[in-house]
Image (tube, rainbow, N blue to C red; front, side, top):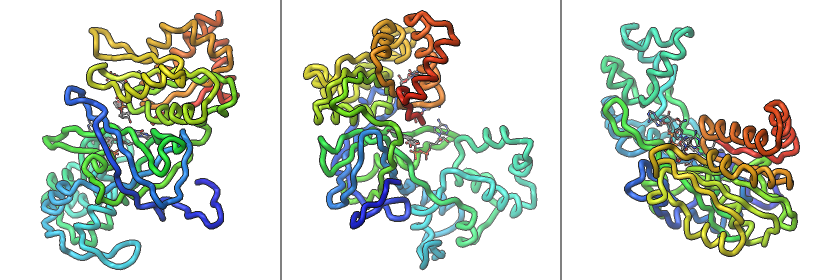
Length: 384
Ligand SMILES: Cc1cc2nc3c(=O)[nH]c(=O)nc-3n(C[C@H](O)[C@H](O)[C@H](O)COP(=O)(O)OP(=O)(O)OC[C@H]3O[C@@H](n4cnc5c(N)ncnc54)[C@H](O)[C@@H]3O)c2cc1C
Ligand SMILES: NC(=O)c1ccc[n+]([C@@H]2O[C@H](COP(=O)([O-])OP(=O)(O)OC[C@H]3O[C@@H](n4cnc5c(N)ncnc54)[C@H](OP(=O)(O)O)[C@@H]3O)[C@@H](O)[C@H]2O)c1
């Protein structure tokens, strides 16, 4: 959390600012395999401040249809009154909508079902500490409702059921705007998580919440500072290289808005990657304008499905390896944002590889060079 400033409101998970949507639109077209959207959220009157590299914590609510279906599976009307852990009482419909997590069943719910079914449920063996992988694979793609429907003899009282649920938690989104450019607004770039599993269409809590709402709906938010994911001072000549495929582009749109607003001096190079130039050219006009006015020195796009073989950002880095190496030797900062499990790993390998090739180094020397970059805070990652 940022240091409290006397007289300024402090927003956090216990006291979020209630923001509202200003506007939202699709960044991807219908042809894209997944929907990615741009959101502009109004922060008027909040006094909220953020820097490029920060993220916004968003507390969404559950899909109303999933709430209705879960209540039906429980045999509840939804009007049953339960106690609110924060004090007072509320209908269980409201609690399942706003307060409890109904998309991620866990061991507490499983144990309660096992107890109620006299150990006959298929869930019982999965709680064996030796069966962690089986448990993970069983829970993958299942919501609370699935466990209820698969175990119809497990009957709950409303209050008792709330007692086996976890609290709905915030999701973080890299901020994709600079306050110097947009004032009392914050912009986000969000991939809407939708998938089908066990015969049911499903959605991620926060990304589908954002995709459903209009300007009348409250969005509880607060700023999560991006430790270390910061631009150099605008008067510095330090070049910046940004690698942000998919929604990883978000902080770099903020970086570029900030660079333009502050007339930043150093060079800037952006690597972006998505499936296709036709369906996923996020922020194309903006980036073209930045190229034209010098805010951006170079843009390399990797369209993974526009040809038979996959082309990813790391292939573009290797292709441009000599120049990449030259920028590194000029002291460039290298920023990576987006998918942690595959992209960031492969981009890291590409970085080592181009340092070996163009820096004339052994793999050990390249690893030492990258280690030094990390120590000098020249290799900065915000991956998820
Ligand atoms: C620092 C940080 C910055 C981030 N910035 C961004 C950003 O700028 N833009 C962005 O879009 N995201 C960003 N994220 C990710 C974001 O926080 C959420 O994790 C993401 O939007 C999903 O949240 P959700 O609530 O919609 O889905 P959740 O309710 O969290 O559901 C996601 C879960 O659904 C399940 N699932 C997903 N697909 C399938 C499938 N095919 N089959 C079975 N189960 C599946 C998985 O268990 C997965 O973990 C960021 C994360 C971090 C930590
Ligand atoms: N862990 C996973 O398996 C997984 C998978 C998808 C998404 N996600 C998560 O879903 C969220 C949203 O994803 P996103 O919208 O940011 O986009 P994304 O799914 O990360 O895709 C963006 C681009 O990156 C490409 N890509 C795939 N594998 C890559 C790799 N190893 N190296 C470099 N590029 C690669 C994709 O190509 P292709 O799709 O054509 O291969 C696509 O062109 C993120 O939170 C991400 O972490 C996770």
